[in-house]
Each structure stands twice: as structure tokens, then as C-alpha cells.
Image (tube, rainbow, N blue to C red; front, side):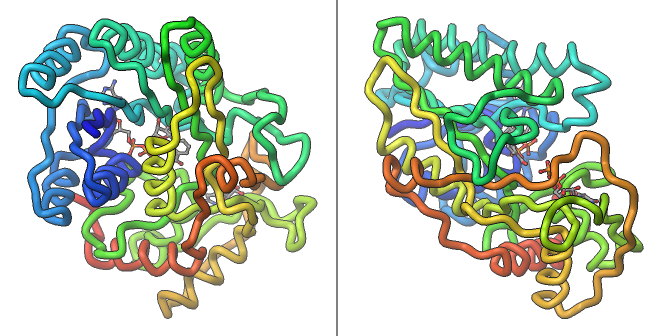
Length: 341
Ligand code: NAD
Ligand code: UDP
């Protein structure tokens, strides 16, 4: 299948492109490189043995998208499905710049869907997030849990999910899969591609990796008085290669037109901040100093997925452990201490 991957130069996108090509799909990437570099795609080409077809484009650029769809069609390989990763994802930034978040995230989705409509492409897999559940009413979280995002980023995801539900219900043959990721971590086992955050990492694993490699002094653990077994926050850390495989499964098993398929992509089990630090330190064989800091505003105690829909409907299950993710992150971090720069 010819798959257009928006945001394909980014962290999850680049791993998914490797997996898609490995599964025999033809891939075209669209990315404006606002949070990534072309070097990731060069390395994807190295890993897959073929250069990646790439268009540097803002997804809100309707004319650029139309030209891309038209070129693919006239070359005899029309785009048949889209995986839509492109967007902004920093929760804190979204609180300060909500309009930019709605513009980029919701704006991109609107323009992309309009261009897909006119190009006759009716199959889309969308990167949603467990953040749409907000403070979850129960764990593990099933897909029918109430959607109540607690920040602008999460609300942009909920708005796009709503838009895609309406598109699916329009009776025009759309097949829509909404994938709600839990906490993507890890890197390709080659150590050639991985997560390359700019500035101070917001997420736990990249921060821990930068402490381990000596770029930062210690990890601040945001709270040790949560109602969890050791008092620190519990999350569902999903290896990015498993996540990439989840996208291939979603392409292989699209829903019938009419109702979107909503699927949690997680492991189904949670790990605490202390467990993550301990596991990383053991795997890397280096100490990871930490201190207890105040809670981070907006954080919840525990968040992990009910993965029964993914198993039953997609036939997909995460295979890689937290230790695997730490080992792969460490390999990536050690061999690329400054990321792609
Ligand atoms: P990323 O920032 O590494 O990748 C996003 C890519 O989209 C980047 O390469 C960026 O340059 C590109 N992009 C942004 N705006 C664009 C635009 N208007 N036009 C074209 N390209 C644009 O992020 P990621 O971690 O790979 O996340 C991918 C998707 O998964 C995002 O939609 C994100 O919200 C979602 N998600 C991520 C996480 C996570 O923790 N990483 C969790 C849940 C959901
Ligand atoms: N966390 C932490 N120190 C950090 C970054 C994160 O203690 O420097 C904690 C955070 O409070 C949460 C967990 O690690 O309990 C995962 O945080 P992350 O930001 O990676 O994911 P999210 O909170 O979005 O699930």
C-alpha cells in the first residue's frame, strides 16, 4: 500500500516509516521539520536500504498537499492511506500558546482531510493520545472511558477525534482509526534513530537518559506522595517499535466505514518513576542521581491502558519490556549524545 506519513521525520513517525517499509509498504513523508531534522529520514533510508520520498511541507499548505497527491497518482502509485502524526505535542507550551496549538493541530487535520477528500483517499490513522482521558476515572483505562482532557493540547486531540467521527459517519466511505498512545519510549535497536527533544526534555525517559550520559546533574522526581505503591507517578511506557508495529496492524485491519476504530496503544501495565530510574540505571550500568521535587501541576497519579481492544481487534500486543526500552534509549543516547545535531 502507498502510505502518506505526515510528521514522518519526527520521533514516532521515523520509527513507523522504518516498520512500514519493512512490512512492504511504499511510503511518502510530509513534514515541515519544525520539530525534527532531515537527518532522521536520511538514517531511515540507511536502515531500510532505500531513500525516503520526502516533501518538506506544512500540512496546512493545501496546494502543496494537492500537488503531492496528484504527483503520486500520475506516477501510477496513488496514495491509498494516510498516517497523520504531524502536530505539536508539548502540554506546557499548549497552555501558554493555545491558539497556535489549535491552528497547527486542528488546522492541519482540516486541511489534510479536505485534500484527502478531493484526492479520493478515504483511509486515515490518527495519532491521538491517552491525554484525552485527563484524570482517568479508573485504571486500566478502557476506550469507552469519558474523554475529558485537562489541557489545550489534549483538547486539540479530542476536537480532531470528534471531527474524524463526523467524517466517518458522513456515509462517504471513510475508514478511520484513532490510536491513543500511552507513553512512547525507547529507540530503534540500531541506535541510529531515536527521540531528539530540543532544549530541556519534558518527558521522563529522555531526561533520565541525559542524566545518565552526564548532560544533566539529576532527575527531579515530581512528587513521592501519590496514591501509588511507592508514591511516585505510574505510567504505561510503550516501546516506540511496538507502537510502530501497532500502526502497521491498524493499516492492515481498518474498520468498516461508519464508525471509527478507537484503540489504546500501551502495554497494559504501569511503572513508577522510581522503577524507571532503577531499571535505566541497571541496564546502563551507571548511577542516575535523583531528588524528590514538588508535584508537577496537572499530573495524575496513575495512567495505564486496558489493551484488550488492541489485542482482539488489531491482533497486536506490545512485546518489548521497559528494560528493552531503557537499553535502546541508552544505545541511542550514548552514540548520539547531541541527538541528530
Ligand atoms: P515529533 O514532534 O517528534 O513529531 C511530529 C512531527 O510533525 C515533527 O517531525 C514535526 O516537524 C512535524 N510537524 C509539526 N507540525 C507540522 C505541520 N504543521 N506540518 C508538517 N509537519 C509538522 O512528535 P512525536 O512524539 O513523534 O509525536 C507524533 C504524534 O504522536 C503527535 O501528533 C503527537 O501529538 C502524538 N503523540 C505523541 C506522544 C509522545 O509522548 N511522543 C504521545 C501521544 C501522542
Ligand atoms: N516525571 C518526573 N520527572 C521528570 C519528568 C517526568 O518525575 O523530569 C514524572 C511525571 O510526573 C510522571 C512520569 O514521570 O509521573 C511521566 O512523565 P512524562 O512527562 O514523561 O509523561 P506524562 O506525564 O505525559 O504521562
